[in-house]
Amino acid sequence: MEMDHVLPADIEKRSMEIIREELGEITLDAEKADIIMRVIHTSADFDYARNLSFSDDAVESALKAIRGGCTFVTDTNMAFMGINGSALQKTGCTKACFMADADVAVKAAAAGTTRAAACMEKAAEIEGPVIIAVGNAPTALVRLAELMDEDKIKPELIIAVPVGFVNVIQAKELITKYPVPYIVARGRKGGSNVAAAVCNALLYKITRSEDNEA
Image 1: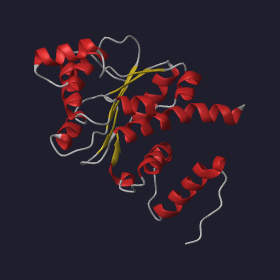
Image 2 (image 1 turned 60 degrees about the vertical axis):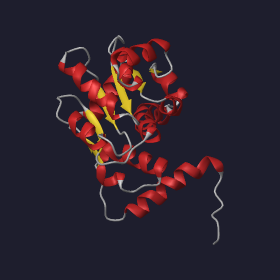
Image 3 (image 1 turned 60 degrees about the horizontal axis):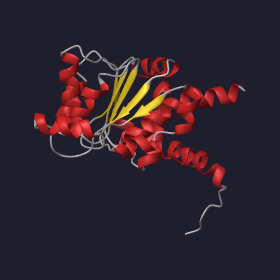
């Protein structure tokens, strides 16, 4: 098989061209297309063209939060590390993951729950707009729903893309019942890489458009 000669700087551009070609007759909503395509680019999985579900106000709410210097909270260090630091710096946003915090481990053990669930309690203490990105633990989404019921947190966006088999579908569907903006990967698929890809796609909507205007 002959390999294409592509310069390193052009690999992403060429990848996106291939994705557009292979999408064929599938038409993506203009507002969501770059987010869906970045997830496909990250995962090489075209199912996301069909199973990535957006609430009506998801993108608008996320961009408003980013312009307001929001905090992205992830349920894994992998997703945390995957969010582009340069894009965060340009927008004045920050990122946080509490999974390794000692107090989270103590609280989770005392409550008999997961550290991911305890992380959501800590996220509720953050001041300012918050975007929650869950790529691994459905228990984080369940605890998040409970905190919303208790009026302790109201994220500007919930990215609900945990991967797996136990309570994953149910937890994702639970989030869609709340009047909070969401991006959900329906079904079993997802992951920390997908969570980070969605965060980056949202950040790039602002940083890359500003770079083009400069």
